[in-house]
Length: 293
Image (cartoon, rainbow, N blue to C red; front, side, top):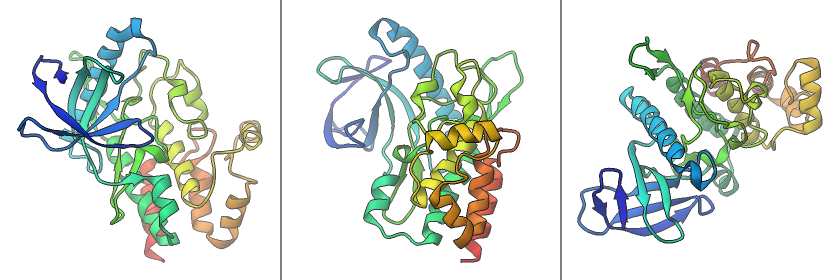
């Protein structure tokens, strides 16, 4: 049995396990009027004695998801609060979101021979969604003016689902925050290595939209065959204040074959957030690149 925070009990049956067992697709078995859902483990502080802190942070992130839904941001799941599994090996707090179709981006790329245009179309959907998130008004404190911008902070191929028709959904808002607001917890290592911007590695930094802008650049790099950035190139980029992709074989090849895409990569992954292309700029650049192919 699964109990919601309000105490009501709903019986579910596991229908499918996906994303390497990190999430469960559940369907009600007791006649409850609810569609299939995605149940994802929520661990914030990382140990049982901080369970109450986990729960409070969890509520905050569900509110972020709710604000995004209210703002009409497409291609993210609907948030339905959180659930507590009382017994068994999966006991704990979980986020509950509407299940969305698709497989992780990595899997989709392995099973489809994508053209340059199709890769750009996937990227444009991701960038467009992030642009919309960065414009969502939020009000974390009642006595303050609204802040603008939800920051995902953990964009990577596992958190991008692609349906068979190419439609993209972005999931897993467990590390999300409000632009310019400290998270209140150490979340640096929760973003996947290689997709973190330099400023995101500083635990004193608040959530910033520039975190997502950098990750978008690495996702575009990934779509064209790149792995996460090389440590040596990353250090050289810090020393030279440029993109860590400069010098990588895939980037240098794109400079010759698809210079417009290489240009997007170069500006999306600048070490300095002040020089980095925004999600909105990347969306427009991707649409321009699609139009000429």
